[in-house]
Image 1 (tube, helix red, strand yellow):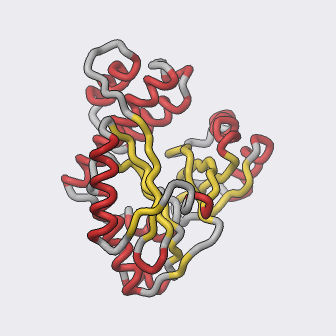
Image 2 (cartoon, rainbow, N blue to C red):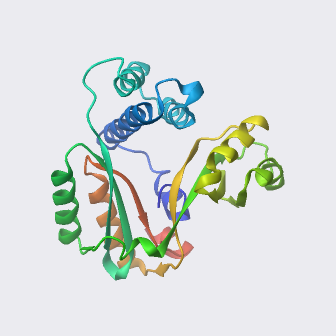
Length: 248
């Protein structure tokens, strides 16, 4: 559920309130800082940083915030935090597998907040590796359709290692092995095709269908986890029918 599944696409069409918007800005700024620290502060030589900056600008994050985060990450300005990525695993209501990806400068806080939220809203934490095996790590690029056809996109990315192109309604997504993500990104650029994001993703190998009641409980858990400052991404293997999505 990194913004790619049908239900998430539907959910994110709802207007975000100011608090959600502020949290989303904070996540994007954090990603820019980490990308600059990891791969250098020059977007032209660091495709991950370039993508994070593009995504932040599209979401209307102020340019000053973007540039300060880039400088902190690159060491050009003091004040950068020592962030680390931690993946927590667990199960939600109805036996849905949940992966919680945190980017944090305080491991104890991230673990404690995630655990207590899972417990409070019908989930439970699991041992490392006991849930992640239900997912495959993939690279996913999302691009607006505009006047493109599925074949246009497929022709552009096939030789770069793309495995599939999926129709998400207003967008297409290109799925590849994670190791081919940069090549797919470059192929889209060469073809003059704009993309909104190109990021690592977790794709479930088996899915769990939920009825309306189960979906409501699961969405409540997801909303509460997303409220946590350290949480960057959430991935689940829940499957919602069009009927349940409409009722939600």
